[in-house]
Length: 428
Ligand code: SF4
Image (tube, rainbow, N blue to C red; front, side, top):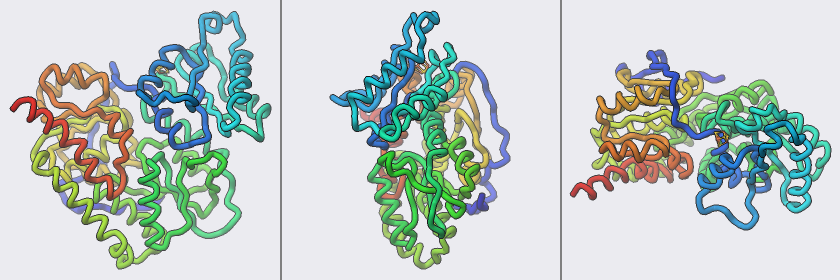
């Protein structure tokens, strides 16, 4: 790992060693199956077969909203009562479903068996099933497995589990020379913009992971360094490090400052000099600052609480505090990875109340006491909170919307200002 380069130096900042309110109780978070919604859009020749119940099928279909199209790239192999009662051999059923699916869909090059609560309850060993099915269907289709079960994962952890399952399949690099791996699903448009900036700085050898095509897996080697583009990828990072990849430590590319820090860390690792870095980043950085500034009148001085949901909470808190001048009341996260979050924690004001995990009633009581102007929360909490008079933002929107990079900084700020503007109009 590399050393942490600070964004701002200020004695009033720094939550790196701050105490954290750790809570265990009722949670209000999606399970890891949700990640299929953005992962299936990214890896265009992959199929996600949830081995689960009708509840799981409903979850991904409703989370996918209107995106049910003729040839979807996700589906559910339903575990029914016969499987649960142990009457039918779930492995035989699974083999049959997979064979039928692959016979019908020649375009599937990578098939994920995605575990769920029911598959866990009946102890269906999906990693062995994936090995067996891979042997059967390779080279045309590789079969991998990961868990998206609500017992094991929350919301964005599904992506972590998926990417971690792919790491062992990344081929070794044959050539020498430093190489950058950018880890985490980003919208194509964001990838293109960040890639263009890296190239302008003279960094040519980089790949995004996951790739758009599973047949185009990035090769990694001892000279590969990686930069996380999403904060919820602790297991993937660990797997990459186990394969000898060095992880660079950066803030996440959210807002003008986060994007600059993220790019700067890459630039330093590749020996790009400061002048060139400034030449390349100055114009887009200014554009980002200007588009964020348009939302400041609405948000400056307003207070905000983040309830734990997507694991994006800490980088988002850093963004709204520094670039929109909002007041942080509570920043909750389902899991706190201090190492991954180090540059972000260093930028939060010392007074920030950090919480990890959730005990719903206690957290809602704190919201009542704090009376934040805006609460960022999961979908299930938004309506009850709105009914109590709070203004809310669904955190899932911050995961589904392209918000990374300079050109998206204004859109990111807009996601915070819009609910307050709407409230103002309703009240007026
Ligand atoms: Fe519900 Fe578990 Fe299925 Fe998720 S995996 S939809 S939590 S049953």
